[in-house]
Length: 183
Image (cartoon, rainbow, N blue to C red):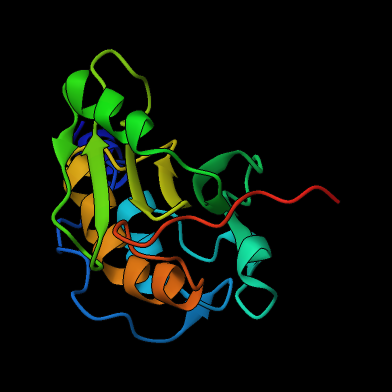
């Protein structure tokens, strides 16, 4: 009986690592700009599959990118970080009206929100930050049970937004957005 009891104890899940995300982005990075340590803490995935990159060197209207983090076991997306051009302040206001928590002004002229929607499976949490028309979103599709997943996406936004939104050449909210051009 004692051997069976000990064997069951050894099969228990490891304790949840509740270490806060780092406050400074440090290598190693994935997708050139995302701190691996922060990803591992918020997803619980060690040695994840990573696809994507951010193109911050092309013209201002084309500076975009995506970083998709997957589990190796089933290749399911656990975290998606997306930088795109074309965001709208009204979308952020709608998140806030729906109960999301406002993000601080992480970069000058930015507005954002984060949330952990009720009723979502897998401890999902989301953050969106808009500066000018540049929209940075963090979609934690599968978070670690027992962590504050909403706080994790907000902390990740604080880590990566200054680099991705500033380097993306996004105009501040006070600067008029350039008129769209047709190709």
